Image 1 (cartoon, rainbow, N blue to C red):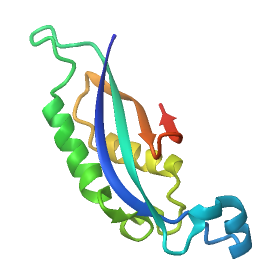
Image 2: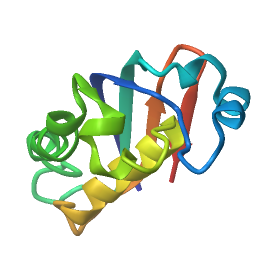
Image 3: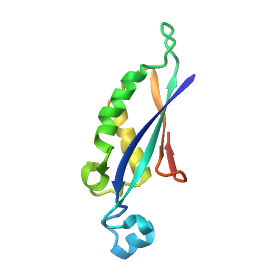
Image 4: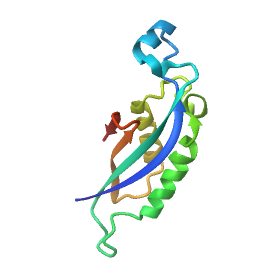
Length: 135
């Protein structure tokens, strides 16, 4: 099996806030990330794709097609957006890095472009110290 990794960047802002919690509970759980005006991050998205390369080309998949998929399904919607208001999934759900990773996986899997290679792992770096990985 071969694994191929691809890295993308986007900038977005968010406010970590759960509507079903009281203002006090939100401040206790989310701290400064519950700022009513939000705050931003320069995210790094890493995708790991796994499978067997083509016998004809030696390639696992067409990375240009992968780039187009990520641009269309993720970056076009996420980059320079206030996630709480501009991404439907986060109107009622806190846009934690965990939830962002899950939404990105859902978006990519709905339109996945290869039946030979599979999306194995998603990593999102919110800061230098904060990263989420899902398989």
